[in-house]
Amino acid sequence: MNTVGHEEVILESFKTALAAAYPDRIVTRSLKDFSDRSVADLKKGVFTVLAKGLPTGDSTFQTMSMLVVGQIELPEKSEGVDVERAESLMGRQVRVLLQRQLRGPDMQIKSMDQSSQLEVPYGWVSMMLEVGPYDATEELTEDEAIYKLAEFLTFDAAIDIGQPHQSADEHRKWLKEPPDFSSSKPDLQSKTDLPRNSP
Image 1 (cartoon, rainbow, N blue to C red):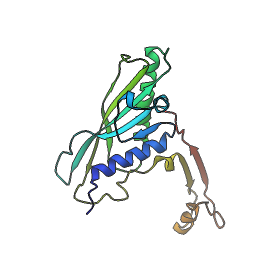
Image 2 (cartoon, helix red, strand yellow; image 1 turned 45 degrees about the vertical axis):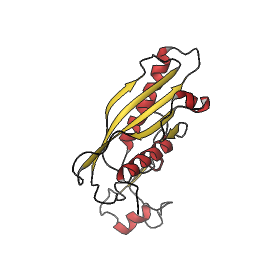
Image 3 (cartoon, rainbow, N blue to C red; image 1 turned 135 degrees about the horizontal axis):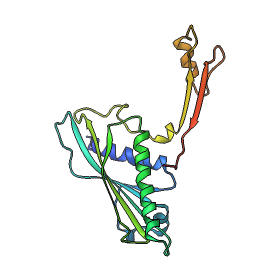
């Protein structure tokens, strides 16, 4: 019997996507006090992904809430404004990840809180995300799975604008890795590398 529910799949998938997008951060599913984390991890910045309450709504049209908590430790002589900027960066990184998300249930940041410079040199940020709707009576399909966003950090386009257009078989050749341009070529090509760690 499979005891892993949709919510667990969504939480674990988001954790995986966040870790892939920001490999310099530590990403976990277990929230711990600052004193229970290593200094090395806190210097890098730790994200924790966790559920916030139970899903709501009809089983075929459910939503869930989840929290993304960021914790960070700056050098001892840091100013409050330094901590505030570090917290804001962690918040922006989560927002950028959501903006890049190409698959999965809709996710929106509903609220955000931070330390307000009260715990220097420690900082934290907490974001509540609303996820859904999704159908809890069906298995999550490939379109609903949240993929590692590292796969989408390069955008590569092959554009066919000339008349007559190339056939679908030719287009499929262009999509191969590496692209097959042996019998035809796109009229226009564009490749954009998206910044991995820049918000």
